[in-house]
Image 1 (cartoon, rainbow, N blue to C red):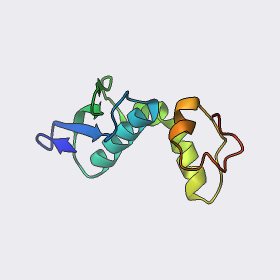
Image 2: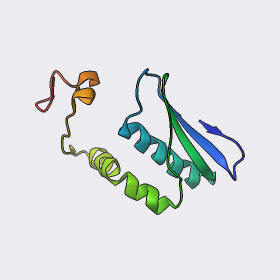
Image 3: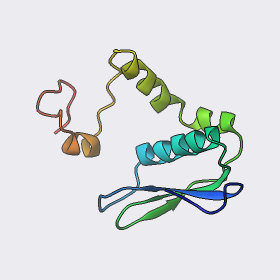
Length: 109
């Protein structure tokens, strides 16, 4: 969700779950900032909200600095988009909520 005027807006990445803000949520918010900027909206602040937490992203400057912050998930997304499979990075909290966990050879349960 974007709030405020087009020249100085706030982007809020809402998550429907109760619990903490994960690094992937932050990466998604940064990606949203880039997408909004591509549409001519100047995002000056961004936040991630779950039902129980709110995280304010550090100061947002250039698009290049954002891309450098999210380069790992961005590269994984590009691999998937081209039909590939990214390197598995299993973590217990991710595996517990993953719909693929029963079939995944890398799952930590």
